[in-house]
Image (cartoon, rainbow, N blue to C red; front, side, top):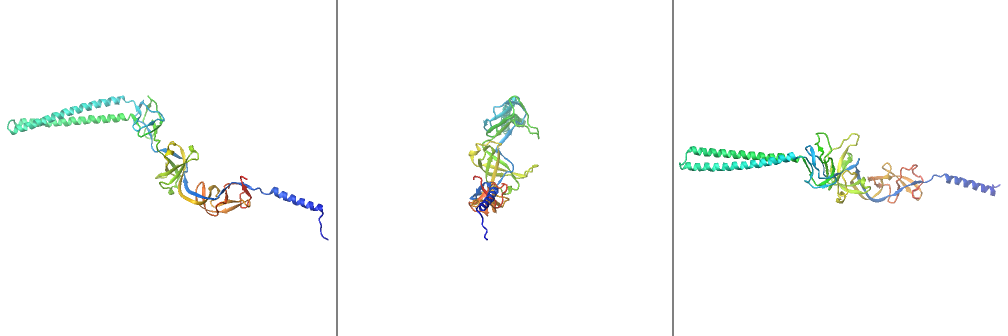
Length: 383
């Protein structure tokens, strides 16, 4: 006899099925919320960056101190002043040298006048000796008189030469005194801005002893030219060449980027204890307008562009796992697919994809989410 279900049993069976379905639905794995990016075509650049913060430096900066010690008598500048080449920055008390210079100049003038007088006398004695020789040829004077005249001429010429030498010594003494006086004055070697002054009027300054660094009296900066010096890891330097393009970011300007070019690569490797071996690379700023906004001492980072790949398939570098895998979101199925890819040129922002993806596919950029695996349910964070 055929088995038949009563209406009550059918209802009970449907209720059990519904409860099982509800339990499965309530306990099913919830989709992982992920962030995605689309594989697109564009530019990918191969770059190298500094290992530690670089520093913006002035092309010319002089930390100046007088070469002699003494008391500051003149200080016509203040910090922040713009000065011209040859302008007086600082002068030590030097009245003794000024008086000595005046004295030696007077002595030099006197010696020069004496030399002129002696030489005039020598010319007169030479003319007289000539006359005596002509008279001797006519038998009008004795040979003794001629000898006396010639000897007097020779003596006068010697006196002239001695006086000229004395005058030259006096003139040289002027140069010596001027040099001593110059040691008491600090002169601007180029146009620039006074960054720092260490000293006040009537204070004493002393030159730095050998091997002991002391603060400069005046720190002068040429603010018309700046460059960036950045340490690059020794393993990356081989690919860097002069005139390669570079991008510079400065902490003081946030995300703004400054254009530059490689102008110099150091000829040696820095081997500093407890730090990676690096090579200093200098970057010049190519936009003159940028230089007006810079200050010496700014910390900066640089990306030197070694290679450029245009119109190539690319994804965010953060989406690449272990260098050859990505997670692709299959939106039609609401699942994740783990996929191997072949990568090419890469930088911090983008990685070139040579094989394994097509334009428009969505790759996960949140690859650190717990539970990511092939076939796992997932949805965009924005949903």
